[in-house]
Length: 460
Ligand SMILES: *Cc1c(COP(=O)(O)O)cnc(C)c1O
Image 1 (cartoon, rainbow, N blue to C red):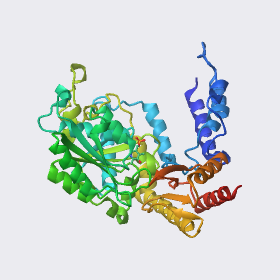
Image 2: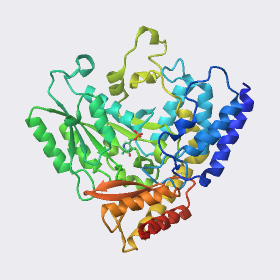
Image 3: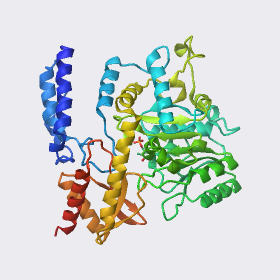
Image 4: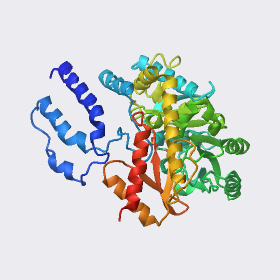
């Protein structure tokens, strides 16, 4: 294969895709199994020409994905890949640098440390935070829960396991992401060991109930060890009262982990930092650049106050991983589960340089203004209602009718192929969501969603 020629063709394919993106339905009109039935069931015995492979990519794969890059993708949270960062992904693939030890990845390790510092500065967090890049918030939070567990005095779970020990208790609100529950499963806390604290009318964790739950658990002989505050919950983007939660954690000597996977990016804007008051008191924080910062999947930032807490929790250095630099250099494999790690810093470094902090921040402002416009249209139409506050760029709303009517509206909009929205359930009611966060979005796209929704609501 002539790599250079084929790489140029791939570059054209990628650029053409971004050009023709809006000609696609956001959700392809296909049923499960349809793609499989059109692909060779057995692997080819002999080499195939790259042209044939790329032709199949073009006709079978590209048109049949759900287009996360499409500006009418407004479901869940955005996860959009900006162009400079796509180029960073390509170069990282060519280098194939495995960022496990400084010795076998010197520039990649140091670039990761630099990018972590850049991101920390961009978020307005103090130098006391160090950190690393992981694949997802789910893994970042799992690592934090394990580090918190390791910090419990006298527990020695790393060596002894948890059998026969008093039960550990982790706290998060009823609105916290399912990844916290998964972390509880994997870390041996168990789903019942995760106490779900009820929220107030604005979907924020109630600190009084948190305190009561901690006291009740202590009275039963259980061992509270960590609290997760969510700044930007997945359903409504509500913000837990982090400063109050931090004060409780300090008083009770509990680890505070902040899950700001989606909304944390907004802290790039100094006038948005009031939403994050108190997160500088956390022991660990997760923010996902692959959500609202336009970094290609995957890229999650895990910040921690004590690097040693993570290293103590995870480090194992078998003979074959010993290197002369271990005292002077960071060996990232010691801070988490994975030995081999992707070189994620390159795409972030290229993106932050090519867009600038102001460039990224300007996009965030646009998306928040789209959300305010959209929320205003909802509030201005008596047939619709807003279902939660809109602190960032995600709107929860509902047609004034029953759940079935709202489900039908969502189905019609999504079946049209012209937009993709998702839903949640609030106070028992089915609620529609729209999240803006694509650099290719304009107010015209937001207006189009509003038109589609009203059309769907008036359909017989
Ligand atoms: C999206 C989200 C997660 C999970 O993110 P992954 O990177 O997909 O694991 C966790 N917490 C919150 C608040 C989220 O919005």
